[in-house]
Length: 408
Image 1: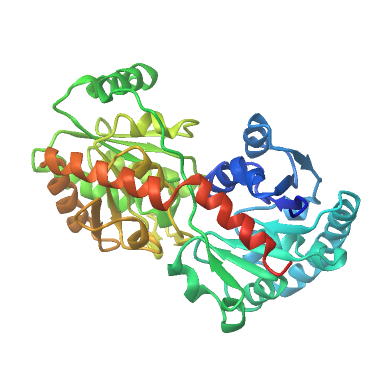
Image 2 (image 1 turned 90 degrees about the vertical axis):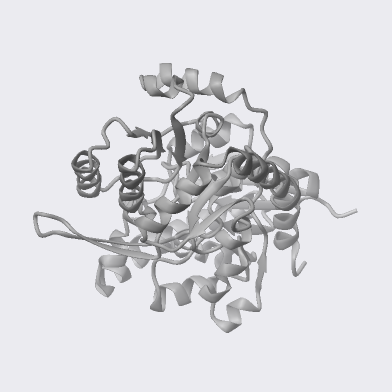
């Protein structure tokens, strides 16, 4: 029998608890069953650290220099002089600190949850002579030397979808394996009770009206999530006489985009239809009340603001967790054709897949789904069974454990 594999999981984003962090935590909840002893390391405190600790996972904060705690793609926009200084003054010293922890804790392998993480601390694996495993959870927002360096630092690569294989160079592809994310199958309250509780919590009285359809978006309000396209689609349905609500959960950081998005919501007359709920700790409470779950992401987007500023966004979708959670709850989806969506959704059977950035097509798919109660019921049942058999947490944990042990 193998001794436990001592694995350090470096989670570089301590302040967010989004899809990448949720998916890793789900796998870690069952990974000890597969002979892996996990230690999760964060570069600072935050919401994600608190959520991991609440589950009993062993965690450690190894404080990073301020330069490594800068987010929002600041380093991507900087010049090479700035990057070189960050490497010398932040990346190398922090990697030395992390490598010492690796040796002290007798760690066997280091897992990096994002390309950003391996760029920030991948040298720790080289310094401690441990294998580095990169988890690629979505399309990469940068190319060139930085992405080449991230691939070179990884001895093994885990992809969450076959759709991401094209992100890798030929040499890296040979070191890659696909492990689907996992999701638990929850017990949910009846929809009418879930709606009543949400109506009280968020002050949305229309939720108690059974004639009102409820769509849920679990996407952060960032440009590539395409919420502006979704708003246009919802406005079309409203104008055609459909009574519906769109509940949007998620938090964003770009104030200019958030203000523009809210102005669009008001201009379209959707203030009583589209409700921006911000961060929601329990998305299952929304899905329990939903007729449909929606994902409107696009590969790339450019938005020209009225003040002359230009906002650009690029997708990092891989195997959208929004869809996995909807499937587990038996909620059919309408989603754009992006990344690994076709590996999740059986088009026309468990949901509808539509072209990106096409509000008319999105509206038509929404209306087809909302108009057919029997289809929604059958689609939800089939989606839940797929979640149970193809995207289970035990399967995700077993696949990750196997990837960590590869090459032993």
